[in-house]
Image (cartoon, rainbow, N blue to C red; front, top):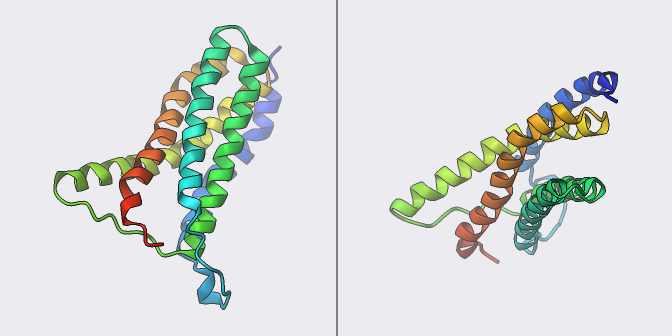
Amino acid sequence: MKNNSLEQKYNSLIIAVSIVIPVVVAILFGVKLKDFGFDVAPLSFLPPIYASTNGLTALLLIAAVVAIKNGKKKLHEGLMTGAIALSVAFLVMYVAYHMTADSTKFGGLGFVRYIYFFILASHIILSIAIIPMVLITYVRALSQNFEMHKKIARITFPIWLYVAVTGVVVYLMISPYYVY
């Protein structure tokens, strides 16, 4: 049974969250707690943790697709909920790190520099675009509109997987330049 009223109920919230998250992250990215008198040590231990969180998200996404293809709906649901939770945890750690530490400059030269910035730019752009896609996909599943859920999930999955994997790649490429 489809529950279109549930989807309609969440549409405004999806739009709001999809706008608020990138705007708040952009603002907080520029906020340094030390500028407000907080004597907080840089949370320099976080980048490998949030990169690992991205890697685990990618694994959960793949496992969720395998689960649903094998008819394991409850497992699929749990894995997808876990992927969303990990994405939220990533976001919190990412913002916390950048509020306590200066941004790290990529030190690579030549062609690898262009590759890094292409991956970084596509990662950032798609990480913004994926927010409403994940939320719409999730709400369609909650409302039991599985036909429409499946349609958008076919688009959401590869983009979300790309964002998760490139998050790890960006970390691996920039990690030699971190100052601890």
